[in-house]
Amino acid sequence: MVASAQESVIPPALLNFPANGMRVTGESIAIKLTPEFTQMQQELATRVQQLPTEKKLEFFKNYKSTTLLPYSEDLWPDKATYNLYCAEWKKISLVPQQVVQLGAYSRGGQEWGLQGVSVNTLSKQVTPLVINGFIYKADRNVWVSPNGELTPSEISTTSDNIYGARKGTAWVLNKEDALSRIREVLTITKRTNGEFVYLTYEFTERTPGEGAILAQGSYVLRFRVGPPAPDPEAEKAPEQEVKEDKPKQEAQKEEPRRKKKRKNRRRRRR
Image (tube, rainbow, N blue to C red; front, side, top):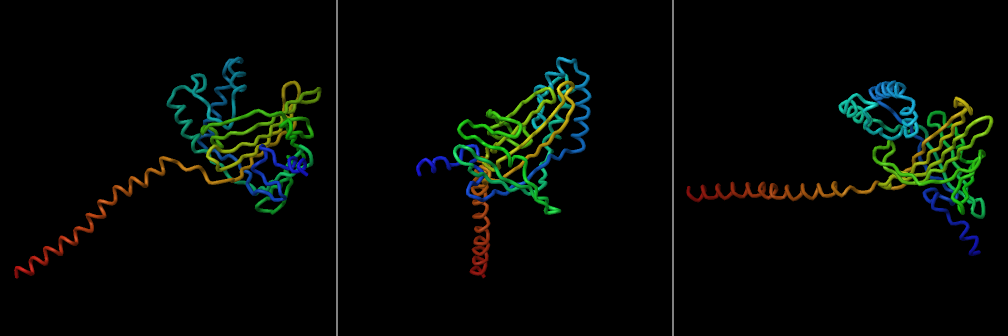
């Protein structure tokens, strides 16, 4: 009985998802860009294509679409143009798409799985998530998909990331054969302020040579797990306001008393 109890303890990687037959409700989200930022991206893509081959390869090696690009003289004509780019980056918003429900379950031993669905808010159509077929092996901290084994690595992002500052794990599969190249990524991260857990999934299949895309798919799921951590600076502000307001309130109370005393003196003189 002791061994069975230990096996049923949910592993750290899945702690934010209920394992008692319940599901946590969240949402799939999409990124919404401003028209100005879209125009800036098009201009940036043109400048990247004009780079020497070596610099172009280096750019794509380090490029992450969800993270603000650092300043580079090769990509922006001046700092003022880059500052405009940063200003538009801050206007990027996250738009809820569909309702999602997700929970974990034990397969016995050290194996676990996720069971989830997305619900179209308009048609009410229920669709199983792709990751439903994945198996998590807690003893080795790996996921196994129909394509093979996804191995882990720790990841963290800063506030310059579209989804905010987060910490967690990315499990990655890179597989290549004579027919295609497959890249599969599953990440589970938590906002550093404790507000949301994000689960993202990406799949890309390309041809071996030029890398033409054969198939691709991705989604970002967000689950609220708690209130955001309090901001110490925000807590100090109300205290300062109360201290400043008290003298003003006392002064207002004293004014009517002075007026009454003056009126009483006048009556006595009369």
